[in-house]
Image (cartoon, rainbow, N blue to C red; front, side, top):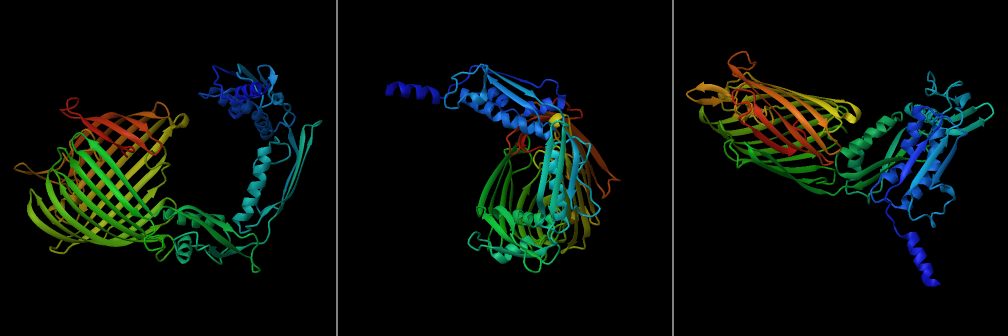
Length: 594
């Protein structure tokens, strides 16, 4: 007897895979929008389509669907609906989950929505002066439960926006009259007093960042009228340091006697150190290896120290091997909560087709975040350069004053489907070993437009413009001049193949530059996309492109594989000149080309 019981129990609990379960959802007499919402909300439809789903999985989903169907009906204003879910002809609610069938062939979900209810009364108050209830919350409108929730939430949020941090729903009465298909809704609000920001406290044992620095970075405006937007920005400033894995500024339950609201910082530190690496391959430029080491809380004040290295041109036909080592120290909340002090250096050796340059740069400056999308930066740098090119061998020393403005509202930095990226750089410079006095200007603008369902098609465009004004080409390092060709400018053209011809087979970089790129990205499925693109570029001898200069172009196609953290990119391009269709360049990397 006991052995039979064990066998029966094993059969009940054993996960039995379904060969096939047919699921039908019917909503007779309902409008199409309601039918679609009910089908989308059904867990049993999802469970039956899932590979490896068992009979127990499908039965559990069917039993859960009763509540989900009712919730959708309420949300759409139907309060007298009837839901029936038949599992092989038996009502799912009557089947014990511990004695369910070993196999399920069919599930029939039938929903009778019943009549649509209307608001006979829709009152809420008190409201902030000169404001109105949420859209749809009015007598004569469809009495959707979602509308009632939105009306209460929006009214409370509006009070909080004007400083009433403790605003809440104090009472609500919702009555359904089934005979008249009517809903009477009354919501009472308690705004509470208007509050000001108080102090920020924290448990010193929960984070390695010092409490004083936490307060400085958060920049909570103590004494000012409470604002949810200011509170959210304070949390964002703490998150942007990278020192914390999670950040919550939790408000005190009770305001102080002078109507101030204190907060407690609940912080979880991120790992203090992080390393990373990258790889990119081009058929002409060769292999590029990069990596970094990062410390997120160097001195206990959320300071960041990062070292980057890069080795490029390995096995390529773009000169020789390039080396670059850089370091950058950042201290957030310097002078203002939104201002970061930075100090940095760069040491590099560039072995390019037209020149060889060994240089070192050191300096510092300030980065100020104007808002979530806009950042400005300004600094001062000293640079020493040793140069060998077609103009001869020379050394240069410069004092640089780099400034930049960056606007970025893209939805995804590595795989944008909408938004704009704009970077404007201006670097005035003074020659310390000559009389050079000039400015290097550079602009990089990108835009993205998604089309179709789930952004199946994305149109991407890029515009680059550069100029070196007020100085001769001999008075600036070659890496401050402009070349075109390769992955960052014109794909399909050899790396830095477009420059200024100064005679006798000698070439140097130009003092003006223009490049245009366009892509059409088409999603095949969730993982794969194909891309078609065309690029064109111009390099000029003078500062504004009015003198000697030349154009070149390239085009091609590529594939993208979405890894979840960014697409793997493979592009094949050809020049659009006499070598079109004969010469090809291959580019492989992570992230979109721009």
